[in-house]
Amino acid sequence: MLCRPSYFRVDYKINPWMKIGSVDQQIALAQWENLVKEYKKLCLSIEIIEQNQKFPDMVFATDQGVLIKDKEILLSRFRYIERRGESEYYKKWYLDHGYKIKILPDNIFFEGGGELQHWRNNLLIGFGFRTDQNAINSVEKIFNKRSIKLELVDKRFYHLDTCLMVLNDDVIFYYPQAFSSNSIHQLKSIVPNLIKIEYGEVINFAANSFVCGATVFMQEGNPKISSQMVKLGYEVVTVNVGEFIKAGGGAHCLTGDLGEN
Image 1 (tube, rainbow, N blue to C red):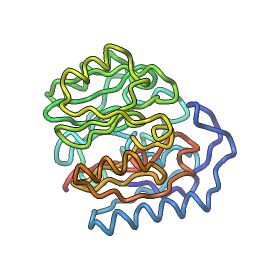
Image 2 (cartoon, rainbow, N blue to C red; image 1 turned 90 degrees about the horizontal axis):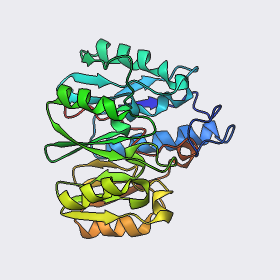
Image 3 (cartoon, rainbow, N blue to C red; image 1 turned 120 degrees about the horizontal axis):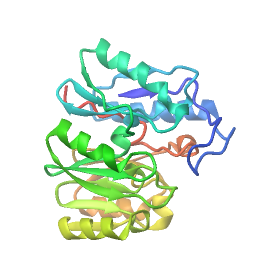
Image 4 (cartoon, rainbow, N blue to C red; image 1 turned 180 degrees about the vertical axis):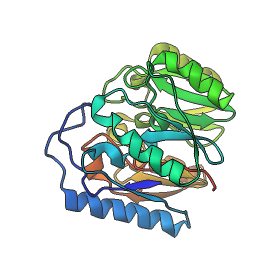
């Protein structure tokens, strides 16, 4: 699921990447259209939601919620007031397309696929800047799965998907400096092949890639991690979503995973 960036721009600052007025809307739309084209080459089924002009960050579809199971979504609850209005449009889209909605209590914040990744039979959940630690118990109950809580400590990496990427059951890429020492210890103790992303590539949103089977869609200009993935048997499709990085999001942020419906 993707949101057409008809009104994408940066006109407020809620993360360190954001620079007001920095986005070229025509280039952004062309980059988004190319991403959709590359997805369709892999025969992915694409759903499009239209953007409301009041909400420039509505384009980051993965933040809106997480698929629990077939046709059931856990809707996000955004920390910043600038983003909260996005949820009503996504909620309507989900309901109009036959999805059931789960909603968290009013007093806790959880930012969807930006913070949650599946690994084996566990939930990897980031917390610290956008998601509350006390939200995690509620998420565990909804999914009926154990979580591994990962504390984020660098404001530039405010969502888990900016600094960690699950490749498969054995391989996870991550940027250690984004995590607390306890979280690093947890990852090292359970992940068979935990691979460090270098600084120059993590700030080029290498971790914010979309993994689909044996194909990884990644921001261009990340040669080291790309070569590592090729050696592991993956095809890397490079894309340029640089206009969206100006707002703190890459390919993964733009892509809401609806499963295999």
